[in-house]
Length: 384
Ligand code: PMP
Ligand code: GLN
View (cartoon, rainbow, N blue to C red):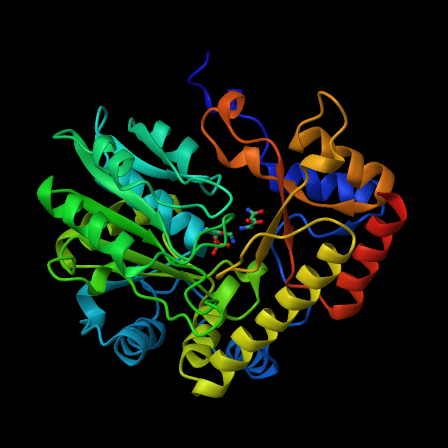
C-alpha cells in the first residue's frame, strides 16, 4: 500500500493555504503574487478568447507561443532553437516536469536531486520508478557540496533535476556550481531537467545562466519556464519546454496522454507576453527585489533575521529563537497561522527524509502588495 499515490500526504502549499483561509490569516505561505497581472497580457488573453478557434490546439502548443519561446531563448541566453522540433508547451511547469520524468526515467534509474527540493519532484519521480539520490545544500548559505554531488552520481544515474533559481533556498547557482554539475552529467552520460521557472527573478545584478548554455550541455538539458512566474499569473498554468529533439520527442509522447494540450487563448497571450520589451522583465525583477528588501528589513526588525535571497520570490528565516521546546518548523508554522494570523511554509517539507531535515527554517513569499507585507509583519510583531 505504501507505493499507492493515495499514501502521499497533501502538498504543504495546499495544507497551509487551507489553514490560512480557515483562520483568516495573511497568506505568505504558498507562492503566488496577489496583484492582477500585467494588463497587456490579460488583454491579449481576452482578445484571443473571442478570436476562434477555441478548440484543441496542436499537441505541442500553438505555433505563436512556440516561436515566442524560441525567440525568448535566443534573446536572453543566445540559445538557437528550432521552434518546430525543440519547443513544447505544457500545462504549467508541473505538467512539463511530469512529462519529463515519465518519458526519461525507467524503473531503477537513479535521479540526482538537490535538497531542499520543490515538492512535486519526488512523488512523480518515484511514480516513474526512479530512485532518488539526494544531495543536501548546506544552510544557511545553502552551499553546494561538490564532493557530495559527485558521490550522488553513478553509472546508474539517468538525470539530475536542477531548480535554478532555487525554491525554497532562494539560491542562484554560480558558474562553478553549474560547471561541476555539467561535468558530472557529461561524465555519466546523463541528462538534466532544469526547472527554471524563476529565470527572470535573479536579484542584485545576478543573471540567470541556463545549464543548457554550458559547453556540451545543449543536447543533454531540457529547460522549463512558466508563465505563472514570469507574468505573475500562477492560475493560468502555462509552461514551456526547450530541449533537443531526441529528448523532446519522448517527452511529447508522455504529454499527449497527460493533458494533450493547454488553453489556446492563454497560450497566445503568453506568446505576446514573452515578446514584451526589456522594461517588462526588468520591472518585474525590480519590483520583486524591492518587496524582498521591504520584507527582509521588517522581519529583521522583529528578530526574524532573513538569510540571503539571491532569487525567486521567497525569503526564509531562521526561526530557532522563537521555537518552543520540542517544536519544529512545521509546528511553528501551524502556530503562526492559527495564533498570529500569518501563514508561512516549513522548509523541512522540502526534504525526502523529514526526520533528518533541518527544522529551524520557515519560508515567506514576498510577492505581495506592500500593505499585505506590512500587515503580516505587524501581526508577527504583535504575536512574537
Ligand atoms: N517549479 C518550481 C520550483 C516552483 O516553485 C513551481 C511553483 N510555482 C513550479 C515548478 C510549478 O509551476 P507551474 O505553476 O507553472 O506548474
Ligand atoms: N510553487 C509554489 C510554492 O512554492 C506553490 C505551487 C503549488 O501550490 N502547487 O509555494
